[in-house]
Length: 168
Image (tube, rainbow, N blue to C red; front, side, top):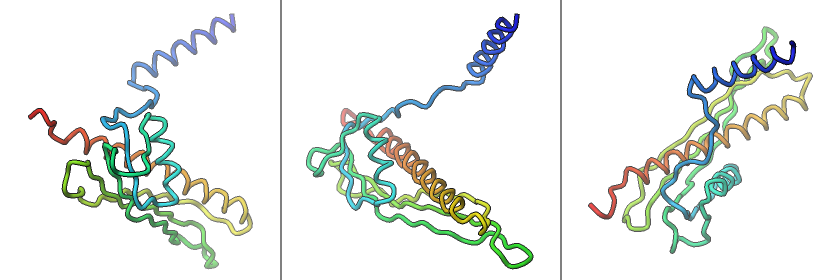
């Protein structure tokens, strides 16, 4: 009886998830298969490379054969105090991560306008848990870089798909 109830509950959950339009994030639908990255921002490069590999996009060592050129112009991480306790101790911080980039396709003479991707997170702070809070901050920054990399890929995909085809 319990086994049957568990199966019914699991079936109901699966049906509810499929009814709401939920689907796993798969590979992006990219219309380019090779990219050259110049001025690689060191913090986001591992995330960009991982996304490229998972989408079967080759990272080329030179721009000669690349279908897309990506210039990671600037990467900035900022940490500001959001709130203080009554005793003047920090209670919350705001972390901000920004990446400025531009793209170009080999046939184009000009680069696209510089675009900025920004991620922002708040986190509580307690100086009695210094090691734990340092680890939490590094995890948050890592998540922000990964999300910024995904946003850059979506923008590159949109840039590529908005370009008029050569047949027109």
